[in-house]
Amino acid sequence: MANLGNPQNTIDVIQKHGFRFQKKFGQNFLIDTHVLDKIVAAAGVTKDDMVLEIGPGIGTMTQYLAESAREVVAVEIDKNLIPILEETLSAYDNVTILNEDILKVDIAKLAEEKNGGKPIKVVANLPYYITTPIIMGLFESGVPLDNITIMVQKEVADRMQEGPGTKDYGALSLAVQYYAKPEIVANVPPNCFIPRPNVGSAVIRLTRYPEPPVKVDDEKKMFALIRASFNQRRKTLVNGLSNAPEVKATKDDVLNALGKMGLSETIRGEALTLEQFAELSNLL
Ligand code: SAM
Image: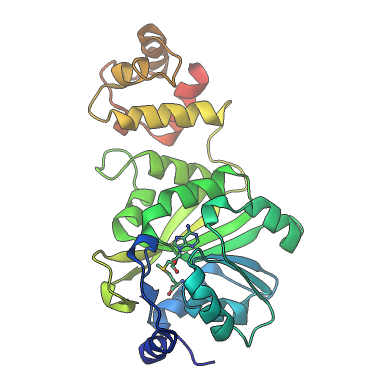
């Protein structure tokens, strides 16, 4: 089968099957062989690996992954793409195509069945409308993970890497940095896709930590605190947290904890590091 990283081959497949792009599924297909090589290299895929690909589209990256991995499971929501994938991937016997919504797939079970519960790699040119739920779902569901190497909107990649004191710092930065080490491996302009997206993109690798970098007694509680702090970004932490129903703390509880941590009573959530959120959660 022709390499779909070549733009003309992608156009030929789309025309042959009369495929119509669906905006609601965030369909922008990669047509740049250098970017494809870079993604697979950044993920460090070897013949030992089982790779989960989210949203294979017409199978462009899937072809690259099938060449490098032991086994690939590709989950695609759009049923119109399934006959195309069956054709473009017919040369590979190590690819399973599932016509499902990734948000409804039991990925931990998949890793158990296909990889004996050993850590898997996730590689994807993500549908941008559900980037955050996909990433959070992967981390929070306890799927054994080696790394996640994904194309996302450039701003979202930046947000995952940011620390306190920047405008992009938020709940996503903290969640990602609790579970993984984020590294941007490539910036990708709109002309590397058909159709062209309206935003710049970036490939980011999230390498799962064996242990989180901070010690926290109750993860759920810490993330509730984090969400409440950034929901009310302009409020002080004391007001934000004592008004949030999901955080069971009074104004005095928060003031006491801030005092013990040596922080100002008027500090805002966006100024706290991950370590400080962990400490605050343990104190409350
Ligand atoms: N991997 C292909 C490529 O790089 O050319 C396509 C990437 S495109 C940005 C995103 C793909 O994800 C589309 O094929 C889209 O149909 C699929 N998709 C969107 N929402 C999905 C979901 N909830 N579950 C699985 N796939 C989804």
